[in-house]
Amino acid sequence: MKIILLTFCFVFTVSILHAQTAEDSVKAIVNNMFAAMKNSDTKALLECFADSSLLQTIARDKQGKVMVRSEAIEDFAKQVGSMPKNAGDERIIFETIKIDGPMANVWTPYQFYYNGKFSHCGVNNFVLVKIDDRWKIQYIIDTRRKAGCNQ
Image (spheres, rainbow, N blue to C red):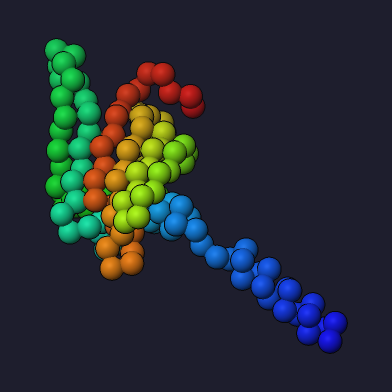
């Protein structure tokens, strides 16, 4: 009887440890996107996004005026696919994750390296939607800068 009880406790404990939280599921999609980017894998990259995804970057024009630049997910995928494998390495920190039912918001400060050399840093703000029981990236807006980065 003790062996059965111990076995049950062990199996129950292991299954709890391996249970994935909603936050873990959201992190997994974001991590999958960056892994696909690093591997120049456009197919895996596109699987992370919803059909009507939008990508935007907050930047400054030549006069220093703030502007928002939009990019189609297909163009982003082409850019990723054209990079050599392991060239694009975006290192993120999951700072804040908020989830409300089928919507999640993820704030990730990052540093981007290209071919091992520091390029820029900033913050990504992801909005994910749970579609057919799977998280998909609906929207990303980011900032980019070269100064004020902790390398």
